[in-house]
Image 1 (cartoon, helix red, strand yellow):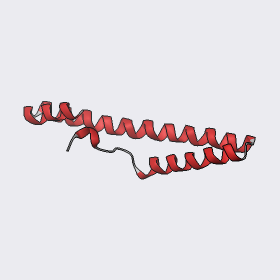
Image 2 (cartoon, rainbow, N blue to C red):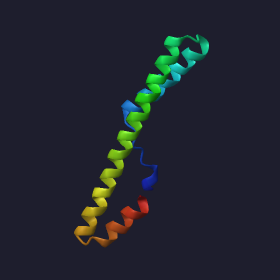
Image 3 (tube, rainbow, N blue to C red):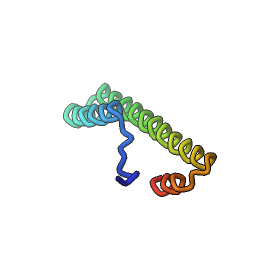
Length: 84
């Protein structure tokens, strides 16, 4: 399995995506200031969720690389670098 195919999205991120799609549809069908504000808020929350989950995933990968480097586990170190 290629490391790049690992999906770091959680259910929370997917829920934000679906909610954002629905809110965008509402905004296009019924353009009002409330719907536009809701869309802006959903986009902001989605972006914040993606950034935090992405940082958690990358921090875990960095910790794994550091652990393999410290333990002189060269094979796993290069495998982790290749997957990164």
